Length: 192
Length: 164
Image (cartoon, rainbow over all chains, first blue to last red; front, side, top):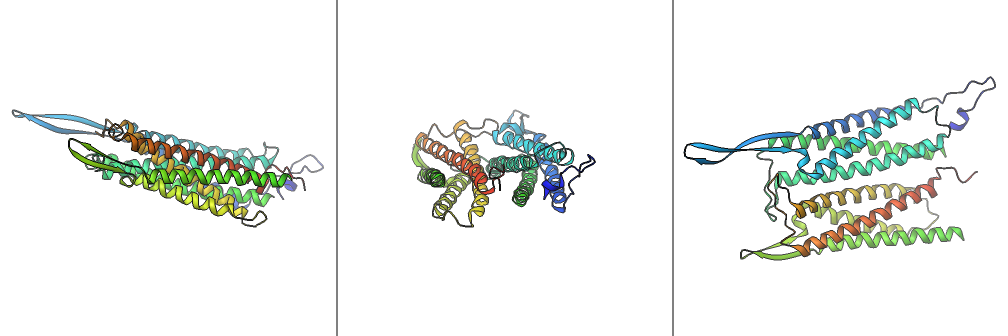
C-alpha cells in the first residue's frame, strides 16, 4: 500500500504518504522514551556527593576525611550513562528520520528494516546497561557480607537516591523502546 | 535442497547456542571454593551474589527455550513467534551477561573508592569458573544474534528478495 502512495502523478507532483495513526503512536512513544533516557543519562552523569567523616580524634581536634562519591567510580555506571546516551541519540535520530527523511529515502523498504534493526540493537544495549547498573546499585545498598563489601548507601543517601531515580527512568525508557520495537516490526510485517 | 541446507544450518546453530548457555549455567552454578584466611574458613558460592543468580536463571531460561525450538516443525505458523521470542531471549542474555560482568570486574579489581577489596586473589578457582561461564554465555549470545538476523531475513524477507 505504501508503494502505491509514493507514485508520481502525470503532471510531475508526487503523492505524499498519508500518516496513519500508528505512525503518531510511535512518534509520541519515541518522545517519551527520549525524555526518559535523556533524564536517566543526565541524572546519573551529574551524580556526585561529598561527605566529611570524622575518622579519629587527636587530643581535642577531630580529624575528618572528605570522601566523594562520583558516578564514574564504578564502570557499570559509566556504561549505564553511555548506553542511555546511545539510546536517546537513537530516539532523536529516528524522530528526525520520521519527520524529515520520509521523502529522501527512495526505497522505503530499506528504511523500515534499518529502523527495526536499530531499535532492536538499542533495546539490547539499553537492557544490558540497566542490568549492570541495577546490580551495582543493589550491591551499594545491601553490601555483600560474604565478600566483606560494606554498603555505601547509608553514608551517601543522596547519591543512592539519584542513582535509583536514574535507573527507574532508564527502565521506563527501556519498556517504551521495547514497545516501539514491536510496533516497528509490525509495520515491517504489514508492509509485506 | 537449499531449504534442507538452511534448516540444517539453523539447527546446528541452535544446538550450539543451547550447548553454550547450558554450559554457562552449569559452570556458574557449580562454582564454589572454600578457603581459609587467618584461620577462619569461608566459602564463596555463586548464590551469594544476586547478579550471578540472575545469570544462572537467565541462561537456564535460554537453554530451555532453545531446546524447545529445536523440535518445532519447519512449516509451523509459530516461527514468527520464535522471531519475537528470540529477541526477548537475546535481550535477557545480554542483560545477564552485563550484570555478571559488572560484579565480576568488581571481584577482580575491587573498588578503591568504596573500600571494596578484590576477592580473586583469595579464591582464584572460583574466579576462573565465573570467567569461563561468562565467555560461554557470550558465545551463546553471539549465536543468538546471528540466528536473529537470519530469522528476520527468512521469515520477514525485509529486503524483498523474493519478488512475488
